[in-house]
Length: 433
Image 1 (spheres, one colour):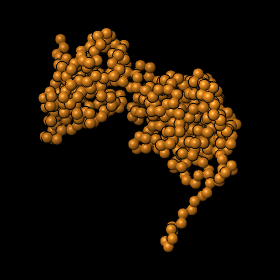
Image 2 (cartoon, rainbow, N blue to C red):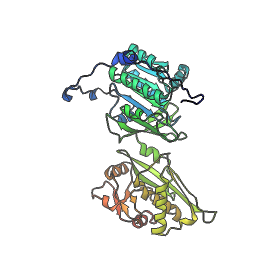
Image 3 (cartoon, helix red, strand yellow):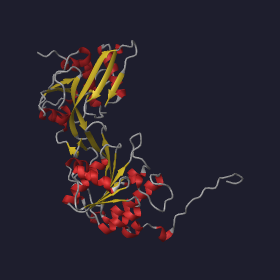
Image 4 (cartoon, rainbow, N blue to C red):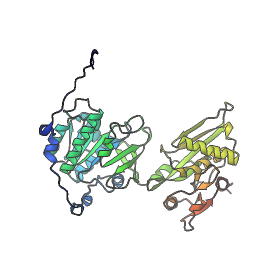
């Protein structure tokens, strides 16, 4: 800027023209020509299984050749653990796998592989962050799968900004996209997340890849959920469920039984709700505890695993429509297992759990509850009722309280259709003989 001191900024000009093209672009990107869509080869039947059924379910059947995927999650949630297990399985069953780590030394990576039992002859590893060097390794080794841990540590030499910056992440992702589409090699990228839970870097990172998977779960619990938020080769309604152990992430074949395995018997405030995770029904335990507040007119409200605003609405309905004296009660609500639930079908389960704790009457252990609660105290219909009831029947439940409009007449177990929250509470909290 003119007439001001110390306002000059140095910028590095990138090469232009043919010389500015990256080695990856020169190696794999060929001139394109339009072709009829009917003549395009269908590669969906060539999927490569990851060797982990729960992950294959989320991906739509496995990895498509030439796909570029992104996996994000909180630190310590298990991203690198799962991908090392995938790398070992693919190397053992399918072919050569290249594991690129920009955050660990090879000695650290081997220690984790020994712990997971993931040492394989065809699993090769390199500690490198230069995308140009990685491109050459892929051309030389011709692996079936490449894992990059993580994309925020990669850099492109022509970009002057440091690794992890917007420009570096965008350009590095573009280079790996060229490699994947040009060579037919499947590439999985690990992405860091921000405090808000979003993947760090520009949004173009998620737009460029073929699928985006998020790891969910609390670090201090063993339960993990991997969810697809974008998938060009399959549905985004599927989830994979894992348990973290000393030997890595173990797929949970029967998650409902796993979640209810430690449920207390005849405990007031405990209710089972059939919850839908994508297209999969899960039976979860909702726990409530109501106790007189020792601080007069300032009762505490605390939730774990559910939306606090919906919980506050359910408490208001119980106070206004049913007359429960909650203004003098501390109320705590918890979803067992460390899950985070947001479905409206959880409303009636929260209401019954709180009412059960306040009245000190337990709900029948083989009775489940579900339904959306309106502000007038009405119970509204929910989706996926058939799958939920089948899951209840499979695990030995005998009856379920559901919205009246969801009753079909051919249910596999005894159902009680209710129109209002009052009807639901009368059935759920009846004195057992």
